[in-house]
Image (tube, rainbow, N blue to C red; front, side, top):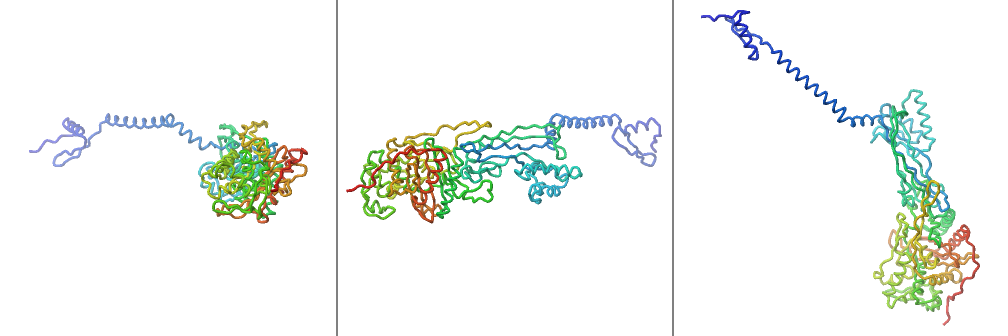
Length: 629
C-alpha cells in the first residue's frame, strides 16, 4: 500500500523541513517513487553570534597592538626612529701641552679635523661618486674610502684623521657647489674637531718628551708617562640631521670635552739643544753606536737636559728608526767602569779606614780568587796615595782600598753593597719613566769570585746614565742625594704652576766625606797626570772622573767593545751643575778621558753660562798623588 506523500505547504511538510534543518543539514526524502534532496536553512542568530565573536577578537588584537606600540614599546620605537635621524659624534679633548722649565713649548696641540661619514646616508645615493669626490681633497685612496662607505661597522666612520682646517673648508665649499648643481656626491660627509699633536722644537728633547700614536694617546716618553693627565676626557654631541645635514632647529645635546692639563718639565730647552748637538757630533767622530748626556742641578736634583744620539723627529714618525725612539739615558743599562770608583772611595773615607793621603803600594798585577787583575796600562809598582789611586784610575789600588771595608772579604762586600744602594744603584729613580731600567746590583752573598773584586772598580754591576749622574750630584751636594726629577708640576690655563711634591732627600755620606771626595776628584781633572785633564774649564774648578769599561753586547750577552764616560761637576768649590757623558761602542778611540771629557767641557761651559754661574776664583787643593818610600 503506498505511503501518503506530503504536499507542499502542508503542515506536515513544514514540520518535516524544520526537523531536517534542526538536524544540521540537508536530507533526502522520498517523494513518490523518487528521493528528493531538501535544503536545511541556517540559524541567523547563531551566525550573528559567531560574527560578533570574530569581530571582538579582531578588535582586541588591534587594541593590544596599539597598547604595545603606544605604551609598552613606545620608547624602543622612538629610539629606533631617533637612530635614523640623530647623529652622535665624539668630541675629542684637547691634549695638554708639555713645556720646558722656562715655559717654552715642547709639545702642543693645534686645530685639526677628522673627516667622517655616515654610510647609511651615503648609500642612499652613490658611494662610488662620493669616494671619488672626497679622495683628492683629503689625499686618500678612493677605493679604500668607498670600501669604508659600503661596508661600515657603524654609522660613524673616520675617512681622514687630523687634517688641516683648510681641508674641511674645501669640503664644505664643494658641498655647496654640488648642492647648487643638484648633486648628492658629498651628502653624509661631516667633520669633527680633533686637535693635532705637534712638536715645535722638532728633535730637541724628542727622546725625553716622547710622541703620541694614531689615537692621540702617549706612546713613548713623557707623553706616555703622563698620558692620563695630558689626555683629558672626551665629550660627545648628538644632533638631528636630514639628508646628511644638521637640522638647525633639531636641537643638540651631549657633554663637553674636558681638556688635559699642561705639564712643565725641569728641562732647559737651550741646554738640551746644545747637549744634543755636542753628543751627536762626538758619536759621529768616534764611530760609536750611541751616546748620552745628562745635566742635573746639584741643589734641586732637577734634570736640566737629557740628550741621546741618535735621536728622531716626532713630527716625522714615519721616517724614524724604531731603535732611536727610546730614551737611552734611562732605558739602557751598562757597566760604569771607573766612574763607579767614586762610591768606593766615599765608602772607604766614610768608614775611616783611609784618607786621601793614605799610602797605597800598587803592584803591576794583583792575583785574587781564580784570576789576575791588571790596570788599564801596564806598569811596575806604583807608590800612590789614595788620592793618586783615583787620579790615575787604578783598578788594583781600588781593590786594595775596598778590602779594608771589613775584617774579611764577605764583610767588606756587605759594607760596599750598603753604600752602593744608598747611592741609588739597583733602584729606579722614582720618575716612573716608561721602560726605565733599575740596572743590576746582585746581593753581596751572590757576588762570585770575580765580582767581589770587580764591583769596587765598576764592573759586574750596571747602571743607567741618570743613576750614574745622581751619584755625582750626591757628592757635589755635601753627601745628600736628592731623587732626580724631570717634572716641575702642572700648569692651569692661566699659567699658574701647581708644583709636584718635593723629592726625597737621603744622606749617603757626611759633608766632610763628600768634600774630601770632591777634592780628590779635582785631582783627576787638575793634575797633569790625571785621566780627566781634558775636562778643564778656564776660570772654573772642575771635579770629575773618567771611565772606560768593557761593554756587554746586548745581542750576545758577552763583552764586546767599550763604554766610555766622564762625569763631573762645577764649580768644584761651590757645586751647581753635574754633567755626565757616556759613549757606547766607539770605534775611533775608547778612553773616557779622550772621548767624553771634551764633550763634558763644552756642555758644562754652556750650562754655566746659561745659568749665569760665575767662577769663584779660589784655588784647587793640592793633594799628593804619589809618595816616596
